[in-house]
Image (cartoon, rainbow, N blue to C red; front, top):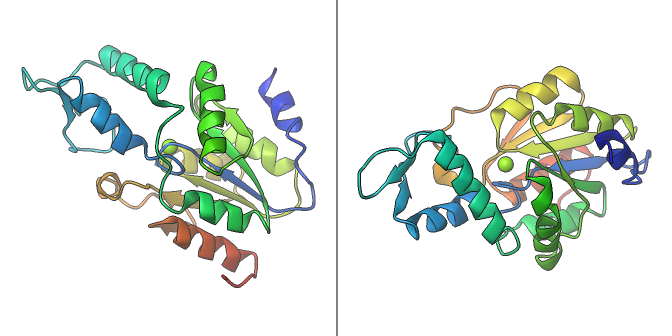
Length: 217
Ligand SMILES: [Mg+2]
C-alpha cells in the first residue's frame, strides 16, 4: 500500500489531537538491547558520539567495524530482538494516560519485514497503537498525518534530523526531542528545531498536557 493510503487508512479523527511517536529510543530501549547484542558477539559500543557507524568496536582488534557490517549487525539485531526488545520506563503508562486526550500513532523507521514483530512488541507491552514502517525522512508522513486532523499534533523523536525536516515541512507540529538512554542523550547537543527537550515520559506527558490546557493527574 502506498504510504499516503496507509496513513489515510488509520482512521485519524479530524477533531482530536494527535501524538506521533518514534519507537527506538523513545518507546523501546534500543541502545540498551543493542549494546548487549554487540557484547554477545565480541563487539562493543565506544560511546564516542551519537551514531552507530564508527562507534562499534571489534574487541579483538580494537578497530571500528565498517559501515556495511554495521548495517548487517543492525539488521540482525532487529531480526532477532524486535519482538522482545524492552519498553522504555513509563512509556506505556504515559501513553495510556495521554490516550484520554489524544490519538496515538507510532512512526518507526524499521524495515517493513519487521513491522509485525514491532506491532507485537508494542501490544505485548501495553502500547497497542497503530505502527507505520517509514523509510528515510519522517517529515512527509508527519505532514500528511497532521493534515488529517484539526487538533494540535505532537511529534516525539530522538533524531535531530527528523525534527529539522518536520520543522521545514510541517512547522505547526509541536516537536519534542527525547532520547530515552541518558548516556546517549549526553552525546548530543540540545537539538535545534524543537519546542521542548524531555528527560523522561513523565516530562513528555506534562508538557503535552500543558499544551492542551489540561492539568496533570
Ligand atoms: Mg528513534
